Length: 248
Ligand SMILES: [Zn+2]
Image 1 (tube, protein in one colour):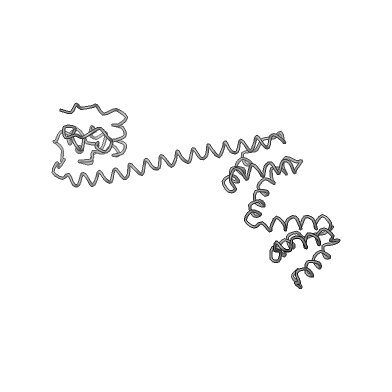
Image 2: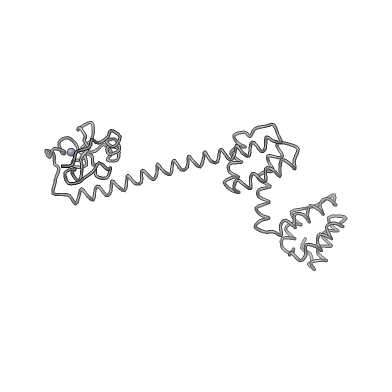
């Protein structure tokens, strides 16, 4: 005959918790009744101490004195399936929570690495708000991009605040350039022309070039930008080159 292995305290607690501390036969709960753990498939029939073979029963029901209907096995089985699903849901929630905590931990580690890189140039730490911004940027652009953009920003700017603020802007620009390679050429052309003019509306020119510039035009328009004398001169030359009229 199979030897009865004791059910551990931990298992008993798991079963009670799963069954909401309620006798699954009569519906009475602790502390009104004393609860026990019952084997659905008895040990004598080959049942084991797995959670799924265990069910919460009150003292009376477990000894056949309660309202327990032993012939109504189908109902019990159905009830048990339901519990199994609830238990599975609970397990999944727990897993999801752990997974989220892992992600938060991982995100924090990545923020710290960006902080270290920033510290290699500036002796100041991110505020909580700053950490949040970097964390969001990592989520949006990926860690590698944020790291690379931080590197670019701290090399380019002498002011810590400015360098910090430009990290996300550089991420965004690089993302747009990757999605649309001509943007990189447009940015070069615009900054080239802008440097030669006292007044310049970069927004308007970028908008125009986005509509007209193709890779074949990059050389010609770069020439125009490198010899431009004023904003109005630049606009006029663009309209001549692209044969447009009144677009500005
Ligand atoms: Zn009971």
